[in-house]
Image 1: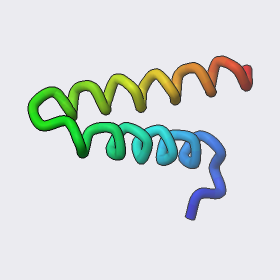
Image 2: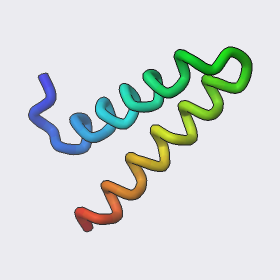
Image 3: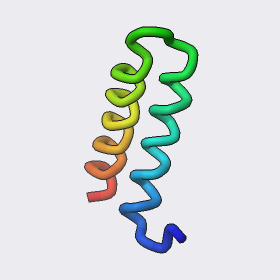
Image 4: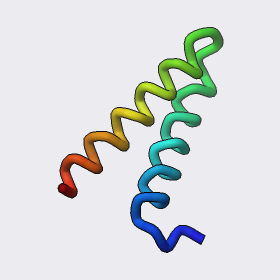
Length: 48
C-alpha cells in the first residue's frame, strides 16, 4: 500500500500527530498537527 516513500513518511507523520493529539483535550488536534507536520518537514528536509 505504501510503496511510495513520500506516502509512507506522510502516514508516519500523521500517525505521530494523532498520538500526540489524543491526550490533550482542547488544543490537542492543533498541537498534534503541528508536531506531525514538523516531523514530516524535518525528515523530508533531512533526506534531501
